[in-house]
Image (cartoon, rainbow, N blue to C red):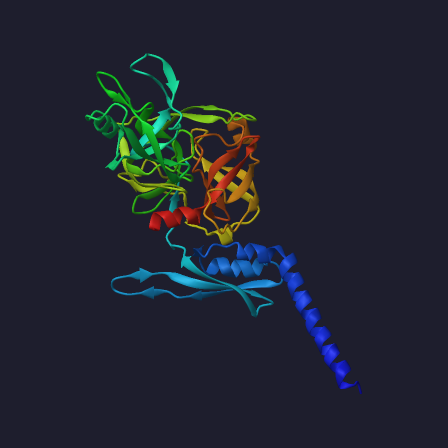
Length: 410
């Protein structure tokens, strides 16, 4: 029989070995990192959790339990649940509150749309101006291209006309003014003097309060609510997510395609008429625009529907994007290279490569105007195209559909 001291040492070494083993499993297993990179709240359902466990997508050591906390009252319907991720099936390592994916299928987009918005404020589109007193060109050293002017002194600026009205009041010629701008999505307060001659006052920059462009429709719900674009409408510099007063969408005709090349992104050449709007934009978000169609019948294919999939549905491997670049709505094969669970909000959720020869022949890969093209995998709409790799137009980024859904339902 071993002495008690040796027994204690043996037990101690056993515990140390177990702790080291567990730590090794945790620190060296990528699934542990992936699980802890999940956001605090996201969309999923029981089917996704069951498939996660069945496919061993988290690795052999990990599993997930789904607890449905569905509540419904006469005034409120709250569909939520809890997911508990476990090591060895019994050691909880993360508990997450989740929203339940809607059961209704959505109409799959993939067609181009025209959009225009009026901004909350005035956007600086050029900081170079002619001095009205001397006729010389000069560069405004304080305001920058892309700045969104929100206030001058204590006066709120809602459009470019507000700036003109403010500056044409009777101020002393050298009076300093305070300008609040949005720059790089951060608020800044600038101090400067305006320019004055015998006729008027100038700020020393060209400004505008409307933007327009082309994007692709991602999906439409049965109530005509839509989501599109996948990334926000930004100013000309791309640095600000533009807050909007109002916005409209229009049916759009594809005229041609400029193929993408290395360091030169291609584009869809489209035409839309601004007096023929077909819907309103409610919000400009980090994950695209959301709004409501007046009549979506021309924008949807009633036979092309899909369930929305959460991020736990996404797998590296085969998938398709839906686009109308050929003139008709078609699916094109892509390969998802990488998909992050993504703790922080970002419109670069996954990386994919275009492998479909037809699409490569038409566009060279991903081009401007294809942002918002739906990404389908295993019969579910899991995301939307957002950006192209400048060095390789066959590669692009996609955003998870559940980020877009959250903005729509939020």
